Amino acid sequence: MSKNMKKNSEKKRILVVDDQPTNIKVLGNCLMGDYVIQVATNGEDALDIVNSENVPDIILLDIMMPGMNGYEVCRRLKQNKKTRNIPIIFVTAMNEDCDEEKGLKLGAVDYIAKPTNPAIIKTRVKTHLELKEHRDKLEALVEKRTDELKETLAILQAKKEAELSQAAKIHSGRLAALGEMATAMAHEINQPLNAINLVVQGWQVLQHRELLTREKMFEDIDLVQRSVERISKLIDHVRTLGHTDGEIVDIDLHEVLDNALSLCLSQFINDEIELKINTLDNIPRVKGIATEIEQVILNILNNARQAVEDYRKNRDQENFQPKVEIFVKFDKQTVNLAIEDNGGGVPPNITEFIFDPFYTTKKKGRGTGLGLSISSQIMTKFNGEITLENHPGNGAAFIVSLPVKHG
Ligand SMILES: Nc1ncnc2c1ncn2[C@@H]1O[C@H](COP(=O)(O)OP(=O)(O)OP(=O)(O)O)[C@@H](O)[C@H]1O
Ligand SMILES: [Mg+2]
Image 1 (tube, rainbow, N blue to C red):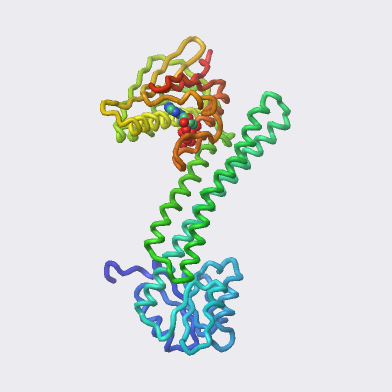
Image 2 (image 1 turned 90 degrees about the vertical axis):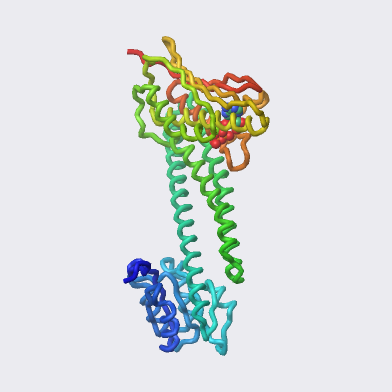
């Protein structure tokens, strides 16, 4: 076996359905090297094969056959959830009374005319297999993310109900926020999902008209990827909110800070942003969940990084050295971790909104506006808070405060 020859188990399967053995032979000969060929000489056999264990990846289907014709085979395959997604290409003789529209309406992806040209057969089969692979990957990805979202929303809902049943008045503000958050999340997720949907629909229309090119696909995949990333980012943000399993324990803020820095240090280095850390020994321990506080620090560091970057870009300042500085301090009651940047600071007219869910000034697709709102919810859980020390025009400092753990 030569090096670039695939093993049979790695090859895609093509089912060729035709009542004329000579036609099968022609198609088989031109596809045999690259694919595993399955053969049926009538509709019933074709259905049996598709419903067996060796499900084909694509079907080349003759229309005029004695007994069950190609349209009927196609109709039955499309009715069955298990076989609905297998691409079907009709192979028809010119003199046959063929109705292209009927086939496409039934869900076929393409037509090829007999006598067949091997080069055309090969390209069409390859294109449709690639298309299917893209579709499958996309569907799996969207399905996975949707499941995760549902799970998170279900946990949020359960949490909301549990807390409601306690009828604790102090919680009502936060509960309302969670409820609003769930609704708003669904809304935010809908936009990128719609974008994905439109792309796929567009592909289908073009494909029916034989106008779908690889260039077009690669061009669109970018948008699809950005949409999926946006969904991922939204979900990543709220995921910790739904977690009920983390235990509040004594933690060392140094360790948490080190972990957060290890996750984002390379970005600061790449962007040539100076990062300075001023800390003290013997920082008292605090109560919390390390991964959640790490997320808070990361959110604030990311904001600071983007703030100094924007400042550098907008002002086009020659001697501007972007800088983010971290200070850890404490007294008897509180440990403070301040993250200070020398960007433009928060515009005074928006300071009252920046902790609101989905409030963002960043370009579409760049920010979700969830970073600070989730961070402050996390801090409330540990009896801490985040405060802003703002110097409009000269930078901003966000201070994370947590009560010292006594005893
Ligand atoms: N260090 C900062 N300097 C200036 N403005 C800031 C700073 N940090 C936050 N902001 C402002 O607060 C807004 C809300 O921040 P938040 O972290 O909640 O969302 P975001 O950063 O826009 O999106 P993401 O979810 O990606 O973090 C930002 O859009 C920005 O306008
Ligand atoms: Mg942010």
